[in-house]
Amino acid sequence: MTSNSTSNGQQLELENIITSEYQSRQSPKLVSIGQKYIEIHIHPLTDGSVGSTIDGIIYTNLKLRTYKVLEHWRKCRTFGESNGRKCRGPNALSYMPQIVLPKLGYSAKNSTVRTARFALECKLGRPLEKWEETRHMDGDPTNNHFDNLESGCHLINSMDDYFTGKREAPFEEIERCLDRMKLLHETFNRRRLHSL
Image (tube, rainbow, N blue to C red; front, side, top):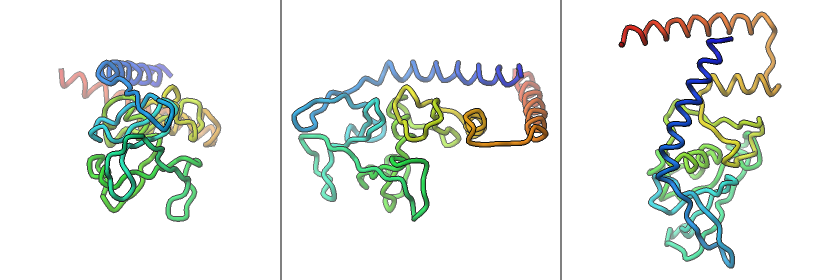
């Protein structure tokens, strides 16, 4: 248990450093959507054309198909299916202006991004690493509010799913996983000592 809590502590410490570093650079932009104004956190790779509100709703100031810059921002459409398969919620994927997709590392043939991942990148003010995944702290994948999103890895996401009851495992399997985690922790410590 201590190795797991140490790992979580190190993850939180790293996340706090990264978050505070990028939040000091990233401040929301006040934009017009019709008659009212909202705060948008601009994605760091989109040249100011796409961003997210703290509620995790994605907006753009680019017109569909022509990609002309608009005076007012518009909401990007979302949906919860990909090639006929259900995704993790009704707003799991967001349509994105295709001109922006190569800047985000997607193929221009693609037309969607994962809403939660995009919103988290806007929150942090940096693109996520390939190994990073979005964590929904309350276990609800449809809640993309900035307060509910944190970065993590696949292992931490799997543990979150177990704690929220989305995954089940027999006690023997959990013990086996804990033994492997202890071994991983020992290996990690040995490598860290050798690198010093």
